Image (cartoon, rainbow, N blue to C red):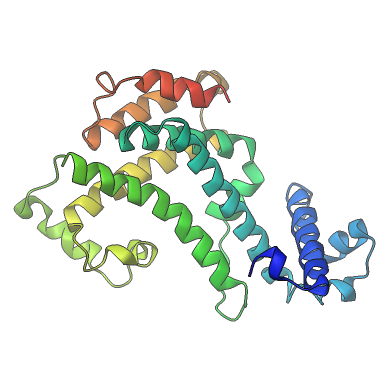
Length: 255
């Protein structure tokens, strides 16, 4: 339902809920993390009053996580739209924007990509899972578009047989995160390449976020540029040949 379709009471409730989420997000960097009592105190309400809007601390944490995922997806779309000439340009821009956002929002990065609450009893869990899915789907869709547009090298059936069996494991979290690919036209060998590329992208970003890369390399983005070019090559993007590869990366790094 749009805001225009809400009653006055519903709009007031939504406004209060938005304020709770903003206040909670502002406390992510505080010692001890989120606290319902601290949030209520900052908002000038009682802790029991807060429970009229949130089911629990875990539920509020899921709400905050959902809002952060929504923000990240918006950032990715904005970056991609600035370089809309091709899916290759869009994915390079979005990957760089993701890195920049993560460096500026360490606590939010930790909440979304390190700390995970997966309690199905929490009513906020479904909305959070859907929001996280939109984030993953953004990169997956661009990846598949690039593959359809210009198929890149993937392992042969013989080379891939053992890995395929491992990926087909029902306990493989990749299947849950990308269940839309199961029984789809996207071969498992292509999914395997996506998993490799995503692991490298997430890996370099996480290393930089957590201070495991020397500051000069982070500030210059030299290591990120090298990893990005390597990832691009894996999916058939020649960083030297893609028009404006360096300028796309440089443009997003400067924002």
